[in-house]
Image (tube, rainbow, N blue to C red; front, side, top):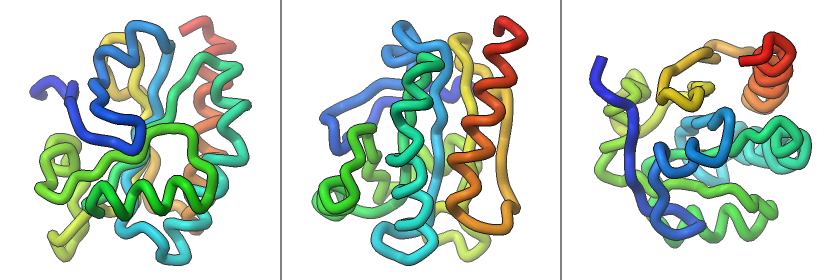
Length: 149
């Protein structure tokens, strides 16, 4: 599999996955179909609620959708997201992670946990509700930490 490292414009400026992982143990990259839709809003709000908890485990969160940067900024501001939301209108990051929706227009709802070696250690999809992605990702991070990974 090709490297999943990426550089992209986000609500926190230009970010690069490998640079973030120099300082963090894990990064949760979650893909969502569209900012301001109900499922995506619930999911973002839950990640925002749990963000301090993720930080205790030296984990960063990155949200990705094919929305434009100004939309992502409004979405982040409205719900208080301090972590970066990536604007991926050209689907570069979405395609890199093979996270395109069945309709092919944007991202499907899928979450990846990535370790320091840029290796995907967990993939979360097909969850009953969008907000569950944050809870399940945090559970997995805690589990990985308890194993000393």
